Image (cartoon, rainbow, N blue to C red; front, side, top):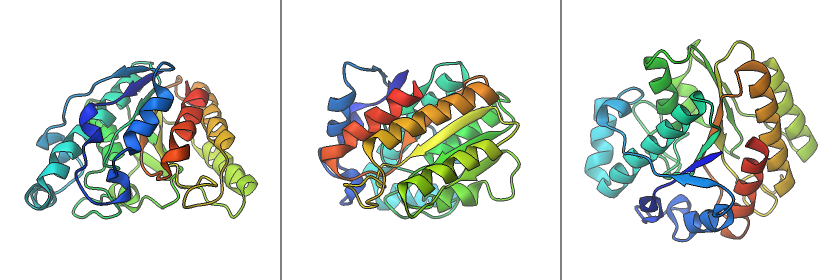
Length: 251
């Protein structure tokens, strides 16, 4: 299990909860010593154009140059995680900014570029895969991911919901069971559903169970090819433990 991380992800590029100081450091403290870390390269504008319009890329570059720079590095982290997963190494992109609210020509919700979608598009462009499944466990619906893959047969997007822990887990399991004929399984891993975060729903052990389910379904359906990328999660006191629990199940 590889964790993709770059020290530049700790830089504060904006004034929002995803960019707060200490957020990435809290996760690193929980994971160091338990998982092997690797650094990514920055994505190129050509990579960004796999999912985003030229005008959107230029807008981010002109209006928030620091976010543009670290955003390209986040995309690079997601690409590396996807490539490792394709080659048989489960991986996790410990990256920021998040990306699932980034559509082709717009973005919001602390996002700039859609890390997950670009990583999948890279695999598709390289003819390594024909179809992917994205399981988004963030509290918020990833409208950007849904918009990018809308009407496409190349990827299926799931965002399970539930008023109670049990209902959420049951919905997630049904989603995974319904997915057929895919080549890689990816998690948009938001941790803001935790009982001590915004969503007030899941327990830390639930994230390990989610990782275990993803591992089992990937082994059964796509040769074990699986990876995740960080989305939300804002309570620094529990975030590291939650990420570690997911990875323990996923590895």
